[in-house]
Length: 271
Image (cartoon, rainbow, N blue to C red; front, side, top):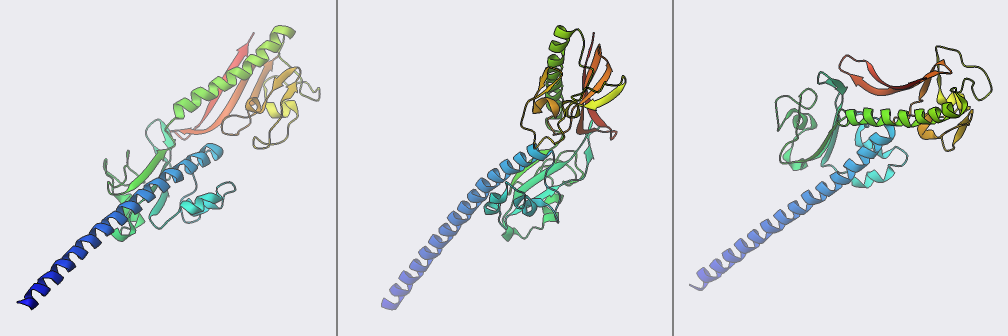
């Protein structure tokens, strides 16, 4: 009888320990999943900042991806966010009939699931087709993921760039109001040729790029800052000179329509 009681007590203790171990494992798994979610949110912020600075996401691995992001000056701290749970992908150019665009995803999935990168990207939780081809794509419900498509915000980007050009054009308009003509010579006094385009940077005598631009330059009495010389993507803003009575400003954006033609934003003044 004593042996039976002891055996029952040991069995109950083992069962309790097993339940406790299972609960601890579940808590640990929940903690790890929450940590991965937090890390992915921070990683997504760095990816967005990278895109804003460079106009593109890191290239597709191998050769690109999250590892390449950590080797980019200013992003070395991203290394502390990386783990075996994470993956990254960047599609080739897709089209929706209006824009050509790329799709980017960063995700975190428990490696114990044994799911390969290819398997993960092939599953679409919100439609038909895989990551690289679907009209719309969502990551698996049992994972954490951040998706961004470069077509998002394109219309706003065009509107913002047009507004930037108009602000610069207003500076030229103020000069016209006082002089009765638009500037017709470059910084060195060389006359501008009718029907020819110049960059504003060249007209003020600045030979660097957007990244190194710091000062305000004066072109024939017109103050032009770096936000006037370069567009939102770091490209040089052009001036199409028709005459001292008609000029246009031009921004050749990196945005591409469905036909493969780069989008050009322009604003002009004719007196």
